[in-house]
Length: 252
Length: 266
Image (cartoon, rainbow over all chains, first blue to last red; front, side):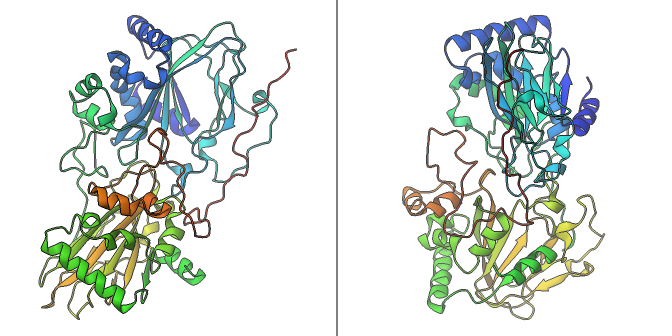
């Protein structure tokens, strides 16, 4: 999927499904690293567990789409993994992540975007991530219908995906994760992207020496992981491939 | 913040607050400024005098800042500026123009407070604004002008000592040249939301202690209260003021999460 098409879909629906983002060999490598991290109980500390998880931060099939959606000032807020075991009532209710945030007119803004990369197939009854399409444009204060169960939400769509697919979601889109009624685990990477001028869930100095070394190798990784750039304000950071930001000032 | 001030700010994008300082208090601020300047510390004010830390929540202007930004207000930066005679102005700009992802005309990401420590002489520097421009479409270009004073429909905000000028970060703003023979001193406090990055100097242990002395100062200076909580900054709220979700007014849904229930297997 080309980034421009992804951006159009995302703007219209509040999410975009990216088929086959990971190729078979890559998927195998990520899945093996994921399983090792899960065994250690370290899915919340994903970046430190294997180089492959740092590689996913600026994955060549995914970062261009993240960038097209978030903008040239994109930054990673956190990276973590998650497993929903078969047959568990572990679903979250319908909500939007940014419902209480102050200062931002959310129906016309993109503050936070989550990227889910699936490591196993997710069938219809398998803890699907689900959306109300277009709900990222709802006016602030739009009422949530008072539902009893996930399935009662009108007009929702379920992300029935294959291993290697990815879903990018606007944090203001109404979404829910259904219970896992299937016989297989749902394994997913969750990378949250925000803007360089926003705080993240960890500081670069808190990352392991190995992760720091991998991050320092490129301009984009330094921005994505919040490494300060001398002489550049976080209000003007930009990824490679575009002109450095220069504030417009007219008149002397 | 009175209702009249709220309407004024919402309509024009700026607010001028006068007369909020006692004379003695104001003289202390001037003396602290001069002390900081002598030691080359105008970019390092929190570490130069406790007064600059406490000033961040001064009753002369902070209640208005809180009303505009909301309960999650936080300080982004603070610095001192001396405008020497004939020092250059700053051209027309929008402070938040580089912040991508936000529909700025309907949002409020930052409020700048300029606290003037000297009276502005007749030809002295002053802040200039285009009233109402904080609501302009974001892609509207600036007119092609040579001099700051050529901006159509601008207003020069000539402020006396002790006046605080509050600007919406999206407002078209400039600062004119100081054409007087006298220097002018001002303090610039910029407020944002607690989930935004800050641009403060590293605080010394003493400054950290002072900033931690109250709940609100700790929030304003971004002092981390729980090292183990990775989401520590999302839910911070100042205390002691009527609740505010910021301006413009927002309505939020009463229900946050619905549909958690489990459907019976059929």
